[in-house]
Length: 201
Figure 1 (cartoon, rainbow, N blue to C red):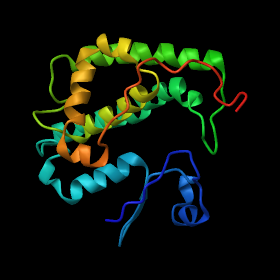
Figure 2 (cartoon, rainbow, N blue to C red):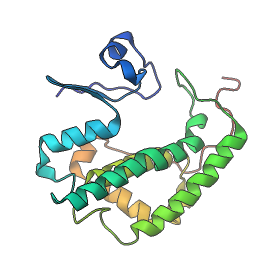
Figure 3 (tube, rainbow, N blue to C red):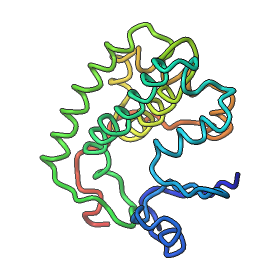
Figure 4 (cartoon, helix red, strand yellow):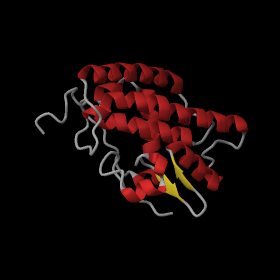
């Protein structure tokens, strides 16, 4: 497998990429194999997990656990990430195609995010893993999307009041294979202020 490093929302939508994946509108990720071309994060993740299921990333092999894993993955991708993005995404500078900034919309995204994360804190409880007794795609999706919030808005004060989420995240971040890809996750000390990052830039 050949990996191509990209930065989301920066210098995307190249002609070559769009020609391979016309429905993608230039959005990443994309996977081109000998017999398949795929876009969409969940589809690619499920395909790769099933290519070699030695890591049991879809659970213990039962239909029930696989369904639970996919449920968490879908929730994290559709609900958690989209809700968090309403808060942090308009605050990030340097995008090729920046999202629109509106102070009230960002504040609403923050309120929705905090409420959703409080529910997640209760849901995780004392569990080491979201499904079963080992790491699955559910844990990977959750931790990666939480990391985006931790980088921009989920600051030290928030982390102190959400020990279950942080325990789950830090367990993931400490996995050797994860460290090979992301040696160090950024944890912001103070949340990014709700101001337009493109004003006077």
